[in-house]
Length: 547
Image 1 (cartoon, helix red, strand yellow):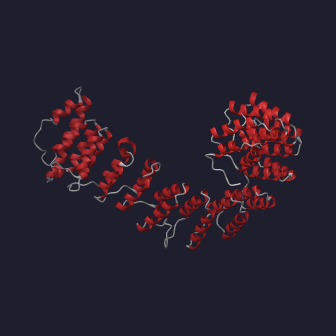
Image 2 (cartoon, helix red, strand yellow):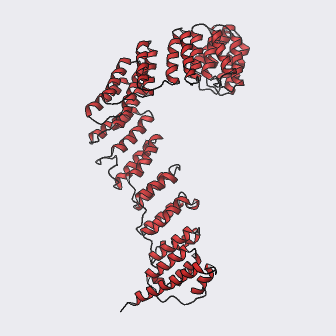
Image 3 (cartoon, one colour):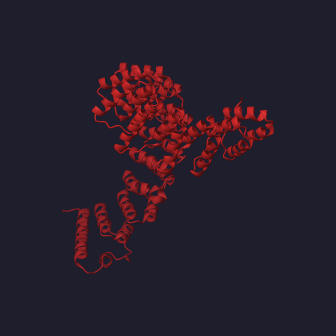
């Protein structure tokens, strides 16, 4: 004999089957059919149907778009029958049909501290998408909801929390406070989530907050990525913090931290070494960079091309070209090939040291490896020949560059103008400048104006230099301290004090800070001509360095 529950379930399912068949064949509206089967005026509670049957019925009504009928059916269920599964079904149905307010109202009943039917993990899963997509739930409104769920021992997954901070909180200054609150609530915060904050704090140079977060992580047992005493961190966390130190000029502090981590048994990877090597190269401590490179090779850690590139770049900037070639050979032995940027650094380094034969060999090697030169490559070669006074060769390289479809950059024009000025060919330098103004898509910048103004003033052509300052104003290029210094020197030679006063007023108006050269020139000149009062007026409000 079948149980009462099974009989009820079977009867309900048959009724549901008949309803769905009538919906598909009848011309009557779905609401009319549903009203006939389940009139909304019914006042009697359902005779304790099984949870399975009720759940199935609500599901099918939802699929048919009969949300009100589904809710009416839910309302008719005895309170004891409204278990968490049925409530979750209604909450999900309401959210999916845009009735967020109704869904949250039912959810509030479930989240009440004295609720007889508290939420479960499925309740949270239903909320995950609406919470991240609906504007009304963005940001810190979610925290209150998380807190209520936590009181019932329900938390979202660690993956969801990581996504939450990535998409909603990382651009907000209070995000770290939210993280702390969730950690205190016992949420499953993992190292990946904390690493996002450590990275961000490191990039901002906020080391006090970094240390505070690491301390909190240790207190709450978030392992194994905690960088605190007695706990072994992961290399990714070490790299995040190390990068923060080095990016903010704390290279020595970063090295101390790195050595401390090694003592705790952390094995550095290629990225760890590349951070330190690049940082020491940037502060021209090439010896320490080479020492770290040798340490990396001896440690046997898996290397990548980037760490070689970092050291090669630093050595080239320091003019240590033989050492750079040695590292290049090590790069090739490790099975890597130099990329275009690496070749450009080496070619530029050899050109700067007037070792063109080596630069030429590298150029050929680059082409043999299938790499085409770019504007940086050509600019290095043009610079070498221009500085050497071999302008015909420099222009041939420029023509080759144009044939390759590469347009000259402001650097290209600057190389030619600077070289012509250095070789006393001001007319040709001015010709290139006028070409930039009239034909080129590349406008001159302050560097080019400064080169020309300085050269003209040294040649005592101060009127033309002043006209270039007018051009700067026309073309929206702001003069800097170097511009004014060159002009003051030129005006001093002419003893054109009135024009100098105008430039001093302009400098103050543009909030262009003078430096020690400015003050040296003006102090000597204006003292000689008895205009110390004008000098005092000029320095008012400026932070002038002591002479």
